[in-house]
Length: 518
Ligand code: F6P
Image (cartoon, rainbow, N blue to C red; front, side, top):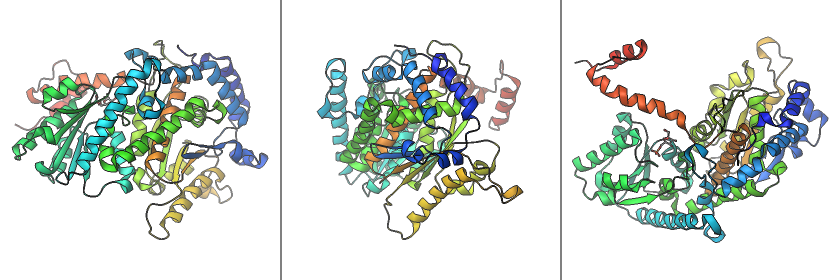
């Protein structure tokens, strides 16, 4: 089942030769001048998403060679293994089946996945019925989701993104940080009888979430709250731990749903509470449409594959270390943070499936802010800095407001920035010159809806799968987060006791500085 690492394919050497002769000095302006078909060849529609890749530093030959690497590396077999429920998350011996969460009841699989699929739909129906019940309960005005990482970022991002579809009269809050300032700030405005707490944790052991959940429960009881069963629900794979905590209402999911791939499961309950059962089903339907595209479109016209291959080209040949996300829609404010976890926790790995140290780069740093705000902050560096950062524009054709003039201004800015990055300005002299030839990808959604958001997020998931598969890494574990957790458990009591024995001098010095004054 293991695929061949990209650098061990024969096509990799051909790609390197192509980079040395044609890739290194590639010029976008010349490429457009010499090929009138460039936009048509390097742009495409996929379900709910149009993508223009033509302002990137590649041509059709580059794509052909990247596709040859992908085929030789066994990308298609690896993809099929994921959809079939094979244990491609080998270091945890788990299947990777978030796509099953999006599969409609009308497309039930036979064979191995039939049982899991039945469980998925049973839980989905129960969770959506619960969401509708809470939505129609006017005594609940505030929902507080307590979770972190994958149990926070997806729901938080989607609730904000789909705000125009949200029911009035319900506020959804998100608490992730163990920093008590966050929870305290939210609790300050709440009344226990009007509040529903959702404790979202795949493992139900995450220290931050457990601390926040305990404090929320204590606040609830101390502020006169009664009926924990009505005011607390858990979203977790660990039903026993939720019960031990005192929660009876639990919506479960399974170990084959990775944390950063879990917003499609019960972890998505805050989204369903905000936009309703139909809206949530729309989100799943959009993602499913993209799953089908990824699963069945020929690789040449497979958008997540084309994007994932571009990522490999940029990281391993151009050696770009970062990629910037620029959503030109203020409701997509949390999208960069969500994508950071998706890509960096998935592909921030230094060993391959066999545990061998890699000799090439993997995940880039992802970062970004909504446009046009970023233009007035860090775009200077993107235009004239010494490093090249590929930029990703996400624009939505139709506005969901009727304030005159704003939307054309917004879209004009997105188009103009992409154009300026590419064409540059050569004859203004000195400080006013822009090198140009700076790459960008431009995504267009017709409207921002549950369906288009679902499709766009699934596109990203499969893109991350593609680059991870070529790199030969396990995109579905996250061992790198463990060491810090262990050390924090050691340090916490030392803050009280002042014991610095065995600590390095810096940690010891800082610990003493941070101890409360007696
Ligand atoms: O520490 C990282 C991590 O395990 C993420 O992968 C995960 O999304 C997050 O913590 C939260 O985990 P849980 O849902 O189990 O609380």
